[in-house]
Structure formats: structure tokens, C-alpha cells
Image (cartoon, rainbow, N blue to C red; front, side):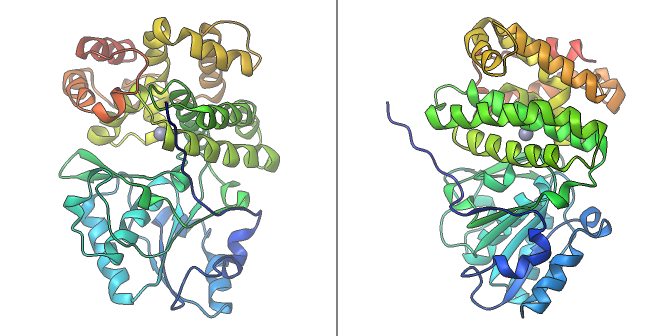
Length: 377
Ligand SMILES: [Zn+2]
């Protein structure tokens, strides 16, 4: 069997790097005009301020598109691309969590070629040139900075993915100082999401490979201890850096060995009820792992052994339950205002996520999905 592995070619790890952003753009932007894609939350926290000063001092002209919202709607992405085109941007920078980064990936494409967005959905469909693209995460979890995926909301609630190698950014900047102020709940749920990326990559059949396995295991080693440390002390910079690097490693793993049923069951929570992505995954995680155990015992057991948790796959499930409890993330659908009578609709929607379900170690059925949602109702 042949395996191939792809990732972003230039990944920079620099505490305080965003404040020296002008220094990190060599050879990326031909015309010194930059479109920064972010959201109002990032703006309000002032995370972009020093970066904008640095760009100005380095002679760049920057426009900021800060209209990104969670679960990016395609109309918003089209508006952003139009604004960047009119500005004459020569570089797109995604600055924020998963939504700004995903939006930036697609905007870079829309600005660089004439392919309509509707033709880009699916695997390998986004073709043609795009503008140079740089990604700077401000949360530790999505791993979007090193993936070739962008998830957009089309219509009312439906989500579609653009998956193509052209979505790998040209450069990534990991600056731990941007993550220091993240609130505890976001830190915990996005950190658990990153652990899910690593676990699902490690069990992803048939695409798991020696490189994705190695990255997934290193990601889990870094994330496992760090999440709880950061929940106790948000200013623990060493633990914050472990989380940032760990979520990036997990992103590299699942970009090559894709996610599975945890994500398939999590997406309807975001699509129908706007439950944040990390939290959605944390909610369904335990029950999906229990369902998978009969087929995933050996692989979960390998992870457990690597993390020195003991023998057998159940040890990994116990550890994830312990981390969830220790970080106080919500445990039921009711606690995030998802009503029990939505389960049938969500289960039907989850079953359409074949791009994800095909990678699950145990075949998922409609009735199993209903049982899982009911167990956490
Ligand atoms: Zn995820």
C-alpha cells in the first residue's frame, strides 16, 4: 500500500511573532496590499493591534475584513472575497480561530481564479490559482492552519466542505501569546477537539499511515497534560505552547488521515443549534468511543499505552472522561439547549456525513446514532 503525506511547507513558531508580522511576510506578497480575515471577537480583544502597527511600519497597506461569524455562511465568504478583490489584495491572512482561517482559505481561492464557489465543494474540486495565503491561529484546537479543508454553511443549516490540496496555506505563524487570554471553556472544549482530531486520525481507516500515527501520538502527549494545566492557570505559557503545537500536530495528522464519527455526529449540533465545534465534539465523544470500542480496542489500546494509561482501549476512554470532568465542559445536549425532539433530525443529518463516517473504525448506523444522542440528552 502506498501512502502520501502533505502539509504546509513553512511553519513558524514564534512567541510574539504577530507583533513582528511585517518580518514574517518575505516573498509572500507581491504588491504590499494585504487582506486580513478575522472576526469581531479577535478585534475586540486587541489581538490584531500590534500586528497592524508592524505591517504599517514595514510599508504594507492592510484592509481588515472582520465580519466572519462562526459556521461561516457562504454569502459572507463571497462578500469578503469581493472586498479583497476590490482592495487589490496580493495576500490573504486568516487570523483567528477555525472560522476566520477557513474563510481565508476560500477567499484566497475566490480572489485568485474565476472558479465559482458552488463548484469547489467536495474533494479535489477547488482548482486553479489562488492568492498567497498565510494563517495565524488564535485558539488551540481546530488545527485549521495546517489542514486542506474549509467548512462553510450553505443555505440555512447545511454544511459543505471544500477539500483540496490547494487549501494548504503557504505559511503558518504559531504565536502562543495570542492564546493567553482564551477563556477556560473555549480552551477546554477546543483542546478536547484537538485530542479528538488525533484519536480519530489514529483510528482512521484506511488512510492512517506511519506519519499521521506519529503526529497523532505526539499531539496527544502534548495536549493530554496541558489542557488541565491551562484550565487551572490560563497564563501557563509552557502549557499554552504545548496546546498550540499539539493542536497543530493533530491538524497535520487528520488532514492526511481524516476524522470520523465523532465529527459526523458533532456537525448537526453546530449546523442546527450553533453549538461551537469544539464543544459539539466534546459532547458526543464518550458515547462514540464506547460504540467504537469493540472494533477500535487495539488502536485505542496503542494510544493508551503510548500515554502510559495502562493496557486496553477502555483506559483511553476513561482518561478522556476524566479530562472532560476535570475541565467542566457541558455534558448533555439539554445543557446547550438542544431539545430531545431534535434527535431524529440530527441523526438523519449525521448519516449524510459519509466523507467522515467512511473513516470510522466501526460502521455507524442510524439507530446507533440515535442511541448515542439519547445517551447524552
Ligand atoms: Zn474538530
